Length: 270
Image (cartoon, rainbow, N blue to C red; front, side, top):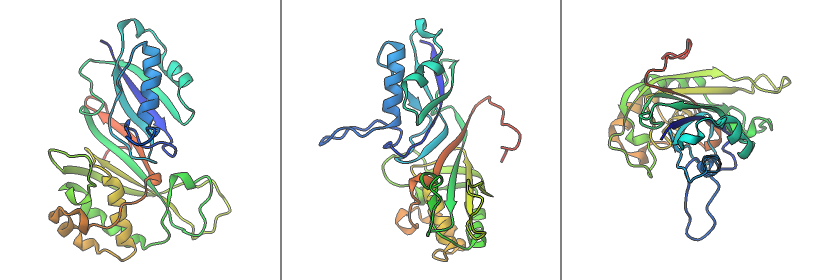
């Protein structure tokens, strides 16, 4: 059957993550996959499984989640982007829909991914427009925060920064870059000491809640609660209990995914 590639954007605030979940004692929680599969199945005229590039957690957002599904031959002429957006909730959008080769796999064909985490360095007042999309972590020492980066970039075993729940054959991953940039805010009258920053993580893959654990570690360094020089020891231990806290989900966004054969746009290279 023809294979369809979907590029999805969504606000994860009201969803229990991407993946469909079955709860024994109550109604299944709303998930992005459930809504997407329902819409795809309706247009395809048959039950259709949709496989995504990654399982975003509850409350996590996406600008470019990628998924694939197989559709009947007689549905290849459908304007899938229009049809699906007509059926989906307003906080889930299909940004692109196209036919791809049969061997394309949204999960296993990934070349690299980028996640962005947004921090609001003021815990007293968070602007309403930012509230669903940032962690209002409060102030910390930016230099100490940045000092953690050289110890994390490169190929490492990140078992100490993986939360339980999704086993992998290997916990070795490569972080190509971690880049911190000021983020634009929608409020011109904010005090000068209010700071909104984005931290972009680019790698060949990420473990369960790895980015949120990276952020928690870096903020702990910025607060003086963890010494950056101890990070190699932490990674070598492979012990999650020795690492600091997991950052909350709302600051995290799946930003970009590249596949084999796709050129990397200028400015995105590691």
